[in-house]
Amino acid sequence: MKLSEKMARLGIETAFQVLAKAQALEAKGMDVVHFEIGEPDFDTPKNIRDAATEALNKGYTHYCNSQGIVPLRVEIAKEFERTRGVPVDPERVIVTPGAKPIMFYSILALLDKEDEAIYPDPLFPIYESMINFTGAKAVPVPLREELDFRFDIDELRAKVTPRTKLIILNSPHNPTGGVLEEDDLRSVAEIAQKHDIIVFSDEVYEHIIYEGKHCSFASLPGMLDRTILLNGFSKTYAMTGWRLGYAIMPPELVEPVVRLISNSVSCTAPFIQYAGIEALTGPQDSVPKMVSEFKKRRDLIVDGLNQIPGISCFRPKGAFYVFPNVKQLGVDCNQFADYLLNEAGVATLSGTHFGKYGGGYLRLSYATSLENIKKGLERINSAVAKIAA
Ligand SMILES: Cc1ncc(COP(=O)(O)O)c(C=O)c1O
Image (cartoon, rainbow, N blue to C red; front, side, top):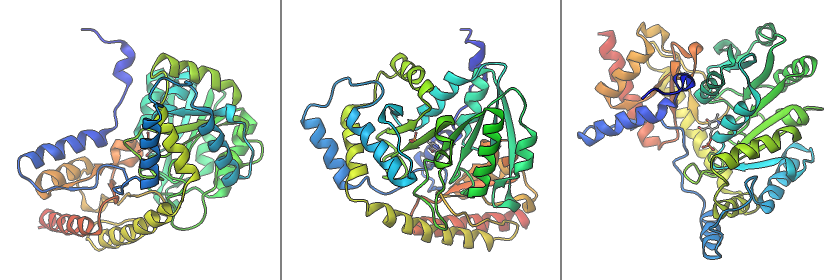
């Protein structure tokens, strides 16, 4: 069968492939510590689960508005105003099954072959995959470890051309855990304004932040109308499997994106959307509890990695990932990740899964128990000692 030419340009999220490899080893009896998958290991709070059950029992089990049910869009708009101080019309809110489709739909709706999209690299791999799929030019700007995994704004500015249509930002960041500063965002806003560029701001980790405060690109003066804000419930409320995300979009993009939804999934399950209303309006105490647990884990894993000869690890301010530098080990990071999985029973991802500037790093998700983190660190330490011997 001959597939379409563009399918050759579509990538994949490799975390799921590594998970499958790790599970195959487990099926053969190997004990594996999982640092590969980026999802909170906490239960979805009970009030949210109860709201979904109630919605199911009330019969919210049929097709619904492709853009998202109005009561949820109203609550999302209120949440946006509460957290960003900027009012937004619920007509600009689009609800999707998980936040990931926002990348798919927006990039498909916006980019053509002659366009260019700039993004800090490393980055969540689906962005580059989707840019390539449209045939547009993917333009990476390196994230610099010495800048706490922020970009150098002059390097970004130098990549802007008359064809630049989109700049993609993600803060707090997957895979590095880096957090952009308000000045970084203001500089991007200036560039976007000057060159009439749309900014895609992925803020899915906005509540998982340990030092400082989240600054939202969409809240900067004049930016709401040129920002696609991606957000969702997966990370904040430990709801990865529910598939519930949303975007706030410039008005011109709403109809085309809803058309893409109606051409693909039709709508997001309504009983899940009612659970989303409860997540936003119900008790919020599970969020700081989860974040404080993540912070303990972050400190354990960063301190542990920094004690291993040849590895150095930046202490990230947000999300639940570390991105240790393994260049001093003198081994290829892909081979090192394979070695850790096959020989030491530790599943990690090579930094190259997140872009060409991810070479020399690994990504570890510390959304796992303190016991698992200790066990994983001991195994990495012994594996490194064997390489050095
Ligand atoms: C940066 C980033 N954006 C978006 C998503 C997608 O989240 P969802 O599970 O809601 O599709 C992820 C998931 O890992 C992510 O890391």
